[in-house]
Length: 141
Image (tube, rainbow, N blue to C red; front, side, top):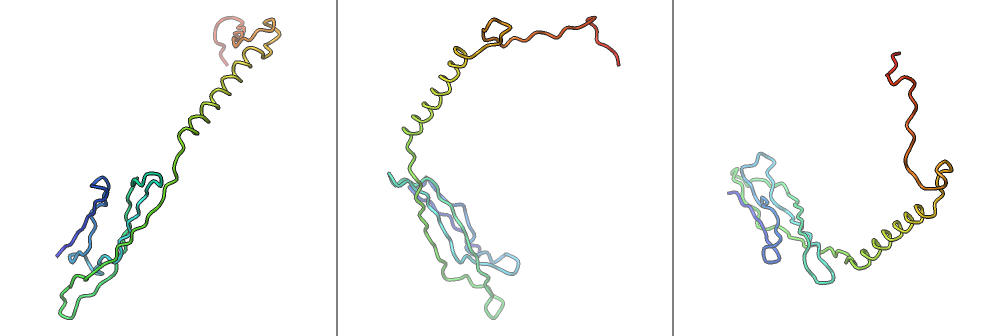
């Protein structure tokens, strides 16, 4: 008979998807669950679980003498705990603020103290002169 399994952790906030432990209706070679590896990614500061991932390994099994398949008696579950580095939000915000302030100051210095073109009397201007046309109509080649 088909045997499937699913697990939930942290009061149901995290779960692994349904996996086949034993499926006798599979075409040969039939497989049974050998090892289930569950990886927890957690925060070191408060111990909260951020994510749960699964990895499955299957083994081939053979039918016993009369062609009848028997379900394996056991499988191994391995728990792997991965500590996620804490993020210092205050330092990140301070760094971004310093970068924005620096870029703004450099922009203001460029506008105020930058040398403009000599044609406009030394003032800063982004306007360009339009090209002169000879007759106002597009020329044919």
